[in-house]
Image (cartoon, rainbow, N blue to C red; front, side):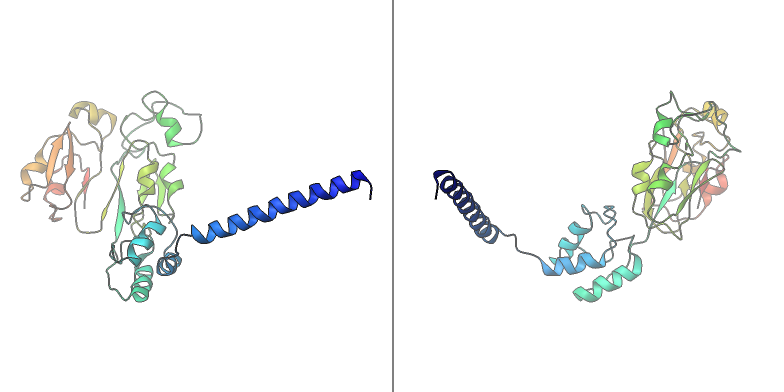
Amino acid sequence: MNETLFAVLVAVLVVAGIGLLIGLILAIASIVMAVPKDEKAEAVLELLPGANCGACGYSGCAGYASALSKGEAKVGLCPVGGEECTHAVGELLGMEGDTVKRVAHIHCMGTCDNTTNKADFQGINSCLSASRYGSGITSCTYGCLGLGDCANACLSDAITICNGVAVVDINKCGGCGLCAEACPRKLITVADVKEQAVVRCSNHDKGAVAKKACKAACIGCMKCTKVCEEGAITVKDFCASIDSAKCTGCGACVENCPSKCITI
């Protein structure tokens, strides 16, 4: 055997030995440092929709599944999964829970009939892009831009752009809140389904200015606050807001709103 061949064999054996040693170390480390699997949490995770929207109050489906397996969370907090998911998880864990039905509300009635475009936007077809175009493209600097960022973010196809403004189909909406995150003007909130009044306006200009921008704008007249027996309505910066926890859905504010921007 010549010296060159011997040197090659030695090099191969050394490399193989090092690889074997490293492999052995990694195998031991994987056993010693292994994170115990929560089989119950994994089973729950398979039953969740995988939206990872955070509407349940946890970081995502994995976080919610982990909390459920430890008995730290209630069954039925996943609005996207609905009753089927609640029933399946409850059956697996031997727990009962009611599905929390939540829906998105669009706080704007700036349709093409109520407001106008002040500019012909030809940029990227996105609300976020349009919102960076000066003070926006519509006459109302607070209103819906109508380019569908919320609809694109919706997992349930519950949002459509109708006559220039976003509209939610409450029968499809899962209440995940992704549309609210996608809206650059923060015109969307998510609340539990119940008989309640909602202010469909986000304009904070003074009455005359707001009305000029949109026929359905809140003018901050405070008539709604005067007729609300529950004290659920406040007016701040010329725009009304309703505390859903206090609202009974009596409809008195709806009847007395001159702009008709409050709906049930």
